[in-house]
Amino acid sequence: MPTVNIVEVGRVVVPQPEDLVVRLSALDAPWVANPLIQRVLLFVDDAGGQQHPPFESLVASLRASLAATLARLPPLAGRVVFLRSTGDAAIDCSGPEGGGGVRFVVAESDDADARRLAGDADHDVGAFEALVPELKVDALPAEVLAVQVTRLKGGVAVGVALHHAVVDGRSVWMFLQAWAASCRSDDAAAVATVTFDRAVVAIPGGEELARSTLRKYAPNLPLAANLFPRAPIKLPRRTFTVTAKHIHQLKQCMSGQTTSGKPATAPMSSSFVAIAALAWASFVRSKHPAAIAAWHDVYVFFFIDCRGRPGIDPPVSENYFGTCITGCLVKAMARDLLAVDGVAAAAAAIQREVRRAAEDPLGLWDWMDIVSWVPLDRLVGINGSTRFKAYEVADFGWGAPSRTELVTMTDGRVVLVATKSGGVQVSVCMHPDHSTAFNSHFIDSLC
Ligand SMILES: *[C@@H]1O[C@H](CO)[C@@H](O)[C@H](O)[C@H]1NC(C)=O
Image 1 (cartoon, protein in one colour):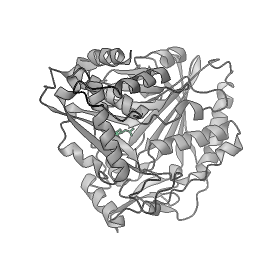
Image 2 (cartoon, protein in one colour):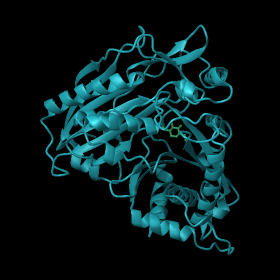
Image 3 (cartoon, helix red, strand yellow):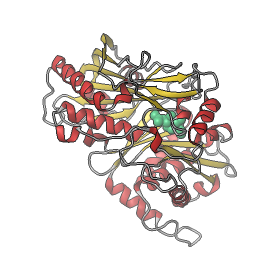
Image 4 (cartoon, helix red, strand yellow):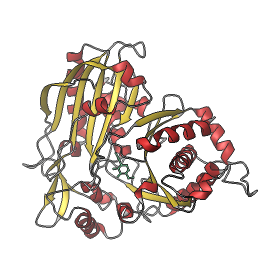
């Protein structure tokens, strides 16, 4: 494993609006007990024909543009705090607890090879973990954002860690987009108008629901025990690139006939449905018969972005900066996914639930509760979105990243972002007992 040395730990402190305390909504609250998002972006020297600035000046411009971005996104420079008198949790952007700013770590490695890290389908998990900062989240007040910039052999890594009660995936990309635009002095793109006022998430139950949700998942505040501890071993992870052509073919297969003669799905299933179906069927096939029997119920879980949807009245703005996602759980009989037309059957089941969730996005607002009853070894969880334009938006002035990955992944997890060219990057974390079988099922079904 490459050696990464911390050179400097600094802070980016910005003047914060006075007395800005944002109470968490019921959609933010569960994340106090499951807070960590870590993502790495790898930039390889000369990858897009563009030369990086020297490391010192690159660090200086990342730091200055981060300060400018935080001034527009004050919750990121705050702290998640516990308000003992009312039992609420909130983002304190300015008070004595909240004014600490953002930890900014500078590091270097002589042997972490940017080109290899960016190119390998199989992740070097240890190296990726060394390129992202930790976040102090075990007790409130909790940090919201930390950044690490690492000089690599032949490139640079930008690692971020964010608190999930303050941002969802959509907000992470809003932040990275604004930061990157500010860093390359693209002022037009940098000025994103966002709203982070939790009051716009008008869900029935309001503040009382937020409070009871917090009590349910974090009963020992200010201690916030992590409900999803990390696996004791480093699980293998692999990234697949599903091209636009693959997606087109997959959709065609799925809209074909099933063995029962009925059309499997509506002719126009989305890229998300196609890929989720493929991942789910591959997961079930790779665990059959050792861990999943034909008569078992199997599950796939993913999140629904509630912005702009009916069901929350008035609808939450597309520019809402916070956590605005609810769950969607799909169940099937393993036998149906093991059949020849298993991917089409998976797609049909997913499509049905996506439609239902679009009509009633709050149906599974308390998604974390499923952990208490769903057999986790028969569940695939999907994070991210085929719509996250990860590679397009994260150009800090020296070209798009060559690679970006979520570092926080657990067994049975699939993470999606859009590729540069209309495809989807699918990163998968599977236990070594099943990963080889998963990989071959996934690749076989693509061709
Ligand atoms: C991914 O989704 C799972 C639920 O399936 C959640 O526990 C986890 O925190 C999510 N990870 C990120 C980084 O959002």
